[in-house]
Amino acid sequence: QKEVEQNSGPLSVPEGAIASLNCTYSDRGSQSFFWYRQYSGKSPELIMFIYSNGDKEDGRFTAQLNKASQYVSLLIRDSQPSDSATYLCALRTGLNAGGTSYGKLTFGQGTILTVHP
Amino acid sequence: AAGVIQSPRHLIKEKRETATLKCYPIPRHDTVYWYQQGPGQDPQFLISFYEKMQSDKGSIPDRFSAQQFSDYHSELNMSSLELGDSALYFCASSVDRGGWAFFGQGTRLTVV
Image 1 (cartoon, rainbow over the protein chains, first blue to last red):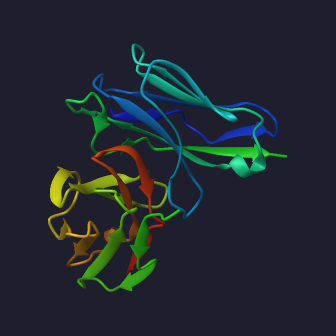
Image 2: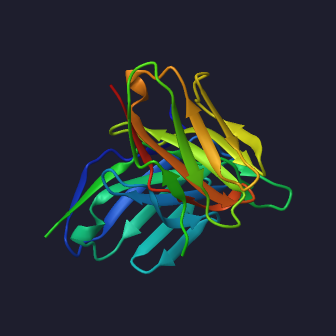
């Protein structure tokens, strides 16, 4: 089992709809979670990070984390064609004495999102 | 704002040659991560450095080596290149091994 699993795509939604991207992880010690957007041939671009259970909103993006269920999701409201990209879920498992996560990022396989006009 | 700089952006090498990829982190970032991403694949962690010391080691082949220098830039040295090494190589940087990790634009390595 991969450490990070993302819902199989590709995901296609109409413009203006809500896109829901899901990610599960196997290590209960995972501390913080990141969503990156990657356009073809380009570098991953950080969209959101979350480390506490619950929801975190930033503009049209909402990240949701449920550590008990080992589940993290990203909702994109009012989807635009420019949101069409691969969305990568990533996590960190290290926790330092100060209580912040550290270390390498482990990525899921990504979900391809297409927003059609 | 300054970002992570990688050079070169594109590199074509023949089998069995060597290649050196460079990464210049965001100013004041002391942690560098290297990732390899094949076509249609997720980024695979290779190795990371914090304060010029190796911090984590992932699936980096023995043919590859890396280091972080006193100015915090890092170099990934790749020897005896194989066709399967063709990929996008990304470098990312962050502060104190944590926080947000920002990626450079990547180096596209093609081995022919």
